[in-house]
Image (cartoon, rainbow, N blue to C red; front, side, top):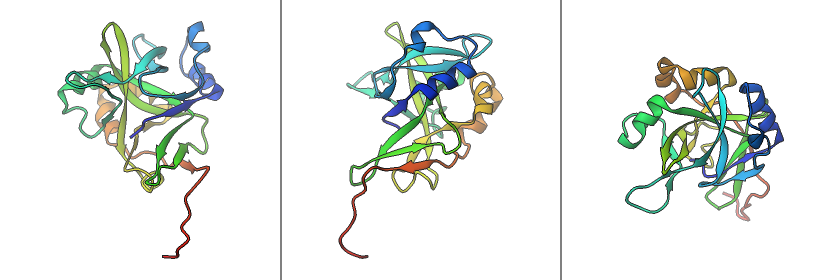
Length: 195
């Protein structure tokens, strides 16, 4: 799962390296933590080249209150509410890092050790005249699984255009093994008892 992520100046600079044009409004985009329902910059393929756009995080739920903010990569093509978007409206969500909470409710940060940005796979759709995106998640690898059983589907920089434009890449990407991430935690509960 991914319920919050962080965007910084390095993230903005990486977006500018990936896309050909960046709207001046997006240059002044919010920095800091991004929460569900907030607007954030995503990278799409609505033009013949990658494009940075602002969208809201989360699909509105039809029968209930709240938002759908994540979708399982393994089953996204099977879900009626996601299938068309995954097939035709894929996007990339750039972030410096994302957060999960361990069983003791301590915040844990995950990031790439050797790269300034995580590129999370996602898709989008239009609701009430506004575009909304969802982050795809996959089974957590050994770098994340001690904290949470799910993690965002991470793309390599070399895979960005394939993710957005190439339908033949889709099936591979939805089942690819995510890269190892670095885990950071400001505070960790210590036990007084030896086990």
